[in-house]
Length: 327
Image 1 (cartoon, helix red, strand yellow):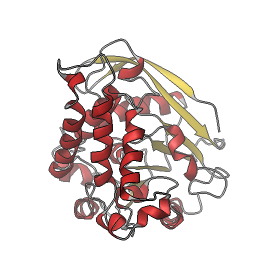
Image 2 (spheres, one colour; image 1 turned 30 degrees about the vertical axis):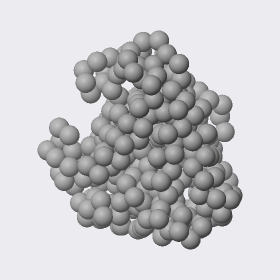
Image 3 (cartoon, helix red, strand yellow; image 1 turned 90 degrees about the vertical axis):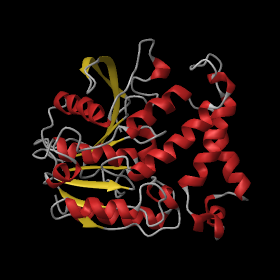
């Protein structure tokens, strides 16, 4: 793996018309082929970083670095690339489309014209869909895992719920905060835990497989994890998430998905509560030649998170191999 690298984006024109001076942080794994044609792009997800995908990456793993040059990009707003937490200037709304525009600048910098595969989990999947629509001649294959091509109304409502829990902290009384809103961050984490997993995860005690002694232990772990995060980064990435819609300005959602030429496997979790199988089935039906391949799991949305459980990891690896073939 390369060390963390940064590309200066001196002036990134955003979808809003504003300009953002930013740095895009990324890592690469494996060796770039002489023809620069063995590249897999993996965008980060909500609360994730480049390091979050490491369980998938390496010799013989889901993304086999003996064959593929894997570029993992940190979203703007995630605390590693330019974000509210590490910049003094105004951040504003950075849409999913803006994220991909920044990543396009990175690929141009690396002199990579062809992406053999774009894949990601959750918000990483949203960015992968945007890549396939925005650059149909550049993306050979697409694997959205537990994600969507747009933020559905139901998904939007879920996010407004966790946003409200965070901003109910008295630290937000003036519309912003000076002291970290720890109570709000803990509440955000506890609310989120109920959406991240499934009914069966709790009903059948599957949480014990992940090392939790009780339901309360799950809740407290999520509360503690989020208490250490930056609230403005969480809100910025949530704004990015809610902005996701590949059809905006492109003749609509259906037309945008119909324009995808990449070989596509759409892989929702069978028990995901907010990136649902129903929404994924619609998307797979709109992408020419796409296969809907649900990820059978009782882990809910977390089924697609890298490194959680071997069965889900193995199913994702099969999908990657099917899309990449013999190279």
